[in-house]
Length: 203
Image (cartoon, rainbow, N blue to C red; front, side, top):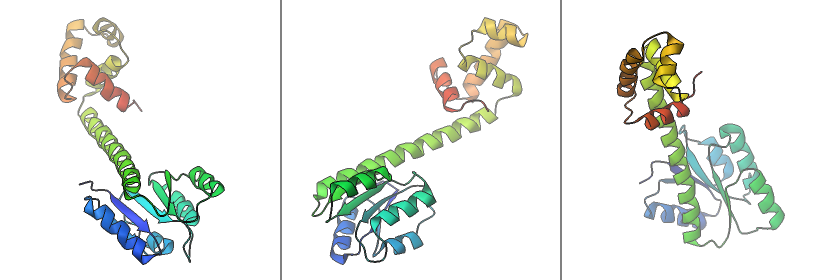
């Protein structure tokens, strides 16, 4: 089960309940709100969420919900719009505002699930990338000053001989530091070490 929650803004109770039932039946965490204003008033502190919103709602339409979310969360929360009153100009406007998908009512459940799973998959990948960068930063923090110099030089593609000349140490000493760097960074190969360095560029 994906730990990221899908937030629904839909004023039609029957549609709202159907969406909740559909998503939860697939093991997807979901919460529903009767309006856009209610959703915005109850945003979770989670760093990632997916939003499914209707367009035409009495207190605040979907366009305004999308605009407010962009102000609060930037582009970090993907939004899927569903509507029974779709037209081409509206769809273009919503897509330009950052909406990732635009689905017309009555919607195909599989089509909606595909869109939601796509958003959740993208958010999970971004979360994994952030966690990976944090882990790399923690490992780099364990390196001594000299080990950090050797690490950065290796990432730049320098040979042991070049590193030795730059740091005024012997190639054998570079090999010793290189082994320590590989161990502390938990790198199984030089290519793996380089990928870590590229994922966490020097400040």
